[in-house]
Length: 553
Image 1 (cartoon, rainbow, N blue to C red):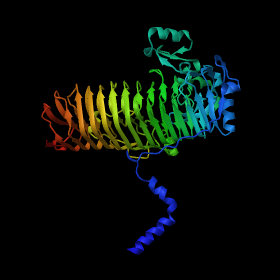
Image 2 (image 1 turned 120 degrees about the vertical axis):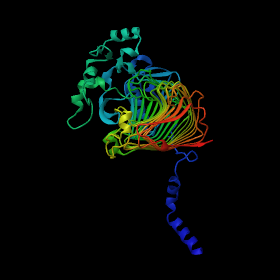
Image 3 (image 1 turned 30 degrees about the vertical axis):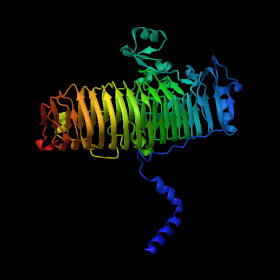
Image 4 (image 1 turned 30 degrees about the horizontal axis):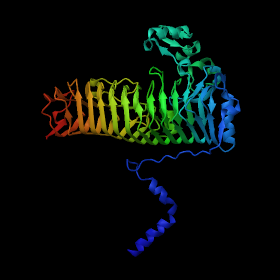
């Protein structure tokens, strides 16, 4: 025994440098959350006024602001101050060790002069693409921040197309009077002929063999810039600032490490085309805390590249915390996908509120993406007046989903390849939703079911109940569903290993279960009083009645 102890001690001494590595390999959990490093700055202050900036709302201060940032960085860093006032500017390039501070009464207004935005190589929805230069950008930087309670406005309305059905009659008349061109059917307004032409051109702007910036100049208006783009940056802080009115995505962080958002506000019109709040793409060690999003597309969104390009990059978004945040009108409150080909893992979401979003918790992908989404932990979520599903896990995003008959008959489906996406090991607890069209929708692929979904302490008041298609190893514990449409309340199609523990439902329930598909099996209901339901279950499309196993409470 003494020799064993001595040997162990010798190994520990020889591998002492590895001890911290062992500590880091402990699986992340609610009691062992990821750690996010924050930037630190010198106190030296560089006021943009001293570099010639004028707050008259007319003077273009691009050069003055960028000169102040360059000078600050060259001298070891510090704070670049945008004081109170209205400051017109073109694109701003951040630099290492600089904290760009926007004063409370400052409005940093991006110009509507599109000639100020160069055509550059960038990224759009997971593809390498030519884009107009972002209003604020930084690449390969360390120790950067945007702070202060002021406002940065992206002047997005001069870039965006819009449909007639999204505006009042008076707003539509004003839009037409401002110029631009109409679509052939007269239902959409485009900012220019350049935009309209590109909208009809497949893969316009994609960087691929044979493409060039020069060839894409004719489509320049179409390449709406994301408002803030940070690429491959480390130790990033966005704090207390309002970012609003972006031409496309508002905040896009790509391949960044140690990113913190705290007290940030994102405001876009509800109709803003691709007006995502924040897209965290292929980033590591992320904190989003005490922030508010009100936008035209997804609110808080996790991405990691699209299709083969994303799989080749091979960088998941991982080790991420989202807490104490609110999402108002948006396509989704918290979202993963659909460009998630590099994967997503070790994500913790808690104490958030979603109101009038199209979907509350949204996981989306499709065939061809590939990528694994796993180890996602969500708790303490409040939702109200959700337009469609409170909780959605969907593998048919933008694709044609099969009919119930096709699923039940096991019609031909593709083999599993690296392009087959996966959702697994997702834990959701303590969720309350008052108002949604559907409580829960899980829709996997026949060749790759959604697996390992665990819901606990869930209360949902909705129009429709639960729908599970091609799902395995799904548990629902202490779940209450009160729905207006209960014919049926719960629909399962080719579901296997689904367990309901203490299932509760409204007293008006007509039919509790509808179970279909030859592969439906091992559906258990325990510790549940089913007597309130007028009819317990129907079996169709080849489902065996033995698929449902109930144990009286």
